[in-house]
Image (tube, rainbow, N blue to C red; front, side, top):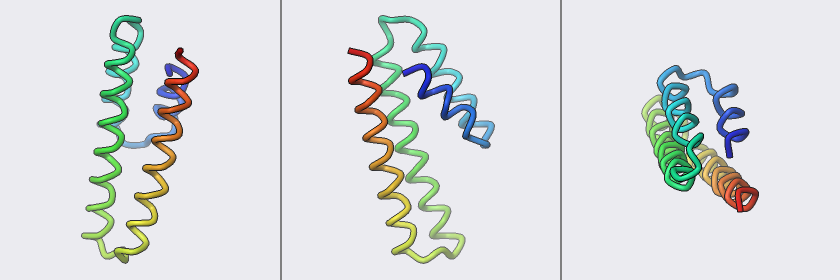
Length: 89
């Protein structure tokens, strides 16, 4: 889980998102809060996919393309969360 969050931290260019990921990384260092931090991280990332989709539509990107991009990002997020949960057990 921590390596996945660190991977996202390196990839993301948005400073606000980096700050949120750092908070989740710090919370996840405590083993009791690991599941809670994982759930919060999943919700934040899903919310950011939605916000990115809305911004893309408002900036003029075609709706079918935005839906496909959001769908791909969501599927990747679900697969990554499943792998992180499975490796944590």
